Image (tube, rainbow, N blue to C red; front, side, top):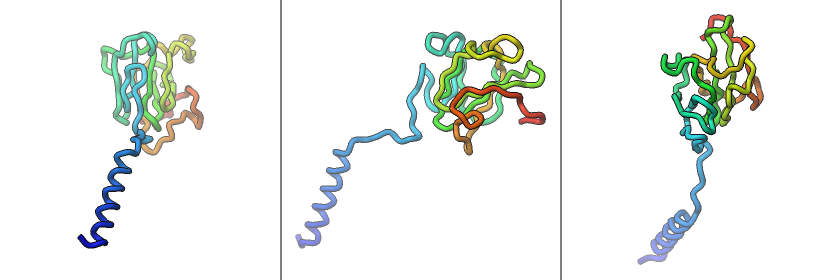
Length: 154
C-alpha cells in the first residue's frame, strides 16, 4: 500500500473514531415534552397543566376553532414550541379577546383575569399558533399578555 493511501485510511479511521466518541447533543430545534405535551404541540387541559387531563392538542400554524367537545373547556395550556407564540382567543367576548402564551411556557388560565370579570379558564374557543417568522414572544416579552383581536383578523 502506498504511503498516501495508508495516510488516507488512517485519517478516515481516526475521523470515524473521533465522531463515534463525540457525545451527541440535542439540536436547538429539538425540544422536550412538558407536562405530557410533546414537542411541537400546544396542549390544552381540563384542570391544571400539572394535574389535569389533556383534552386536546394543536400544532398547525393557522387560525383554528376548537372542536365542540373542548370549546370553552380549557383550564390550562402548555406551549412546547421553541420559537412560536400562541393566542388563545375568546370569540364570545365583544370585541374578540386573546391571551398570548410565549414559547416554552405552561399556564394555568385561572391565574389570569379576563376582561369580562372572570378568568381565562373555560373562556377560550379558538387558537392561533404563530409560525415563522415569529420570535416566540408576546408583545416583545416572554411574559403572558392579553389584548383585543384586531378588526378584520384573521
